[in-house]
Length: 114
Length: 112
Image (cartoon, rainbow over all chains, first blue to last red; front, side):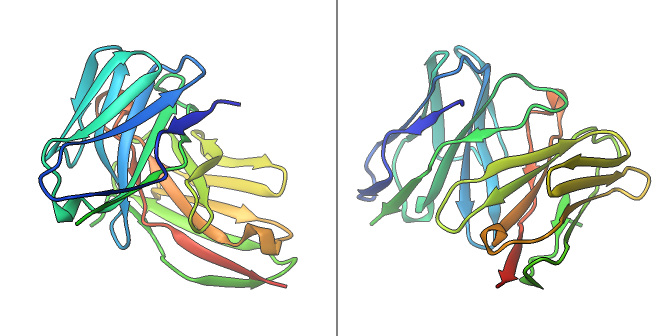
């Protein structure tokens, strides 16, 4: 089975800090994604990457950036953390895009910004 | 209108019954559809995908797609308490289908 590993399960950071969330997948998937999940708002796409060094904005990219220097690793960066970025962050990967290719999610990182 | 809509529930069914979960979508050009299950405190896991009109069966799960009416449903036969979870409908959109939109999910409770 594909495994998507997120480096931290829980994080507490202070307002203004630069925060790095790491995600690693072990099955040579082309595509990787970062979502945040909030009660009442569901899953919202922040950024995605379809190849090494390639990235595209999702629906809510403001305040975030990403890095994909290696195929297996996709990092989400909060440039200056704010309290409204307190959320559950989910990384996902897919073998390729197309009909029938669903996502495998990591276990999530619950980030609290104080 | 939301791009992907689901009844938030909760939907409560007795053990052994059929649970029926529905999802409607707004983009007529959508070609593939996914169902994910999310247990409380856990991340979503893929259950099924469907892209042709009609039914697709996998064990106790059946996905149904009607593109003309723009709805997709998930039936769970012989529901078990372990099926109690939130079920998310997901629809890829945009160029290349990378921007998958998730519905808010339907909470299902299966009573023993």
